[in-house]
Image (cartoon, rainbow, N blue to C red; front, side, top):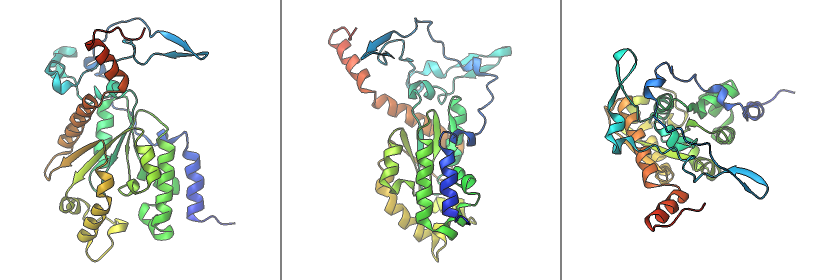
Length: 294
């Protein structure tokens, strides 16, 4: 019996669970990693505690806290340092995101053509210990056909269902930067997955987007007035997009490096403004002159 594209898609996506990282590009060249390494104290190993018969490491202990600061608020971290062979390098602020995120994923959302895939890939490579995944790319490779073909043969609803399955398979991983489809945010079930990480909204004016995607076969823009269609889609999705943890406004003429830098800085600032509850409690105890729980 012949399988439909939707049946084939569901079967292949089921095989993706646990193997989504096979679609990630190779990490960046780390030959110069030593020159970018943060000096960390050689403290004792984390204290292993027992609770309910299980062993666990206290996440609030000094040993568990990497102690990495926001480099934009500590200029010393951005100063050039002597590298190998007398070269001069400075620490990349993106590399300092990794220890501060502690494995938390980054999800890029926004309209088609906003640069989610390009910026996400750049930031993941600069971070060094994170991999990059593109949900659209995974979906196309699993289906064996392009997204426009999926829209044409199965319709948008089937595409959205498959898209949700891809997110289900990748969100269980840690230390990944994920570029998502523009309409993925419209399903509530997808938001519950996105909120397990940090969500970054790349906000771009529709006129700028149209210049970027001119000549492409975007399924939802095959109308008599693509610009108006794009504006309508943006308005429909605006409320969801604005629920992101971080919003980065992109102006026409900005280079991809400038956009990536802006995203990195916004993420560092967000981490500063939203410390975990245990860290807030620990700081308050110290300010009150109390000993932290031993």
